[in-house]
Length: 193
Image (cartoon, rainbow, N blue to C red):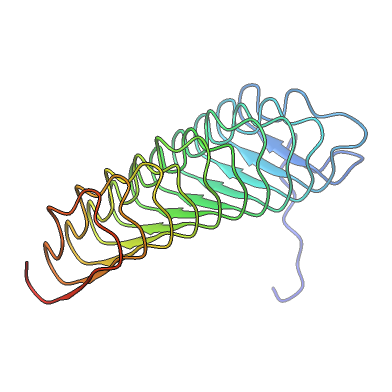
């Protein structure tokens, strides 16, 4: 009924308010690791200095040692990230290798190869997959997928700015818009190709 509490034997918060379920989930948690949720085999396994994180899925955030206020949902979401704060990774291997803060990756493989580069938003399968730049937005499958060190790009649509590696300050809206651009800066494209 309303206000009822469900109690599952063997599944409850520890003294620091952490809730862990799954083989090795939250294994490195200590007395100063508080208010985390880790569900899945090795989810949040290495965390020993972070607070207020959510890990759901096999190997989700399993290498994270410090960082707070993060959300890791999906198999291997943020799996190789060692330090990260205030990021959201949702999808299989989303943000898998990231070591930068304030990123959002939603979709399988989104922001998956990034090791540096913060304040990026990737929504779509493989969006911003190779990114190491900052302040980039890729929405759509393969949007900015080859982007390496470039920053301040906006790509909305399937395969928009997909070949871009170092071109900066570009805006592309529409399927394949600026998809062949690799290094050019300050371009705007709206519509199909």
